Length: 142
Image 1 (tube, rainbow, N blue to C red):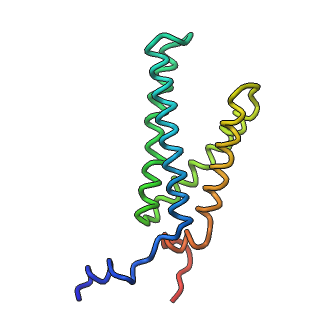
Image 2: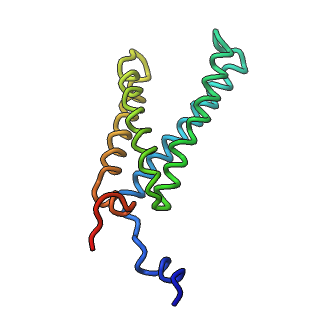
Image 3: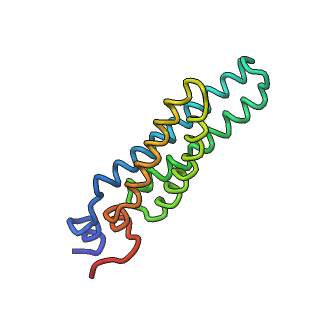
């Protein structure tokens, strides 16, 4: 049996369900950023806002920023250790955004609650010992 066959065989590290859930939540955030970016861009292009240039720039920025959680989610699914860092940073950056949404007196409050719940849940899943072990981070058993 060659070394290529053993790496893909039953000795390969299985992906814990917590890691799959964290990847799914990160991908959900990325998709939400794309949706918000498209909405902002369309709003700016249609002239439905006071500052169309700002809306268009914000929309493009949101779409580009969506790459971070989407790439992190893909890396988490493929058990790449590098993907945990961008995923954690994305969650930490989402918490102040959730706080600002919670301070609004509008329909943004439920969005703030949802974002806070998703961010905290994803952080807990990413910091779980089973997740870090599956990604090859930290001490390994002999």
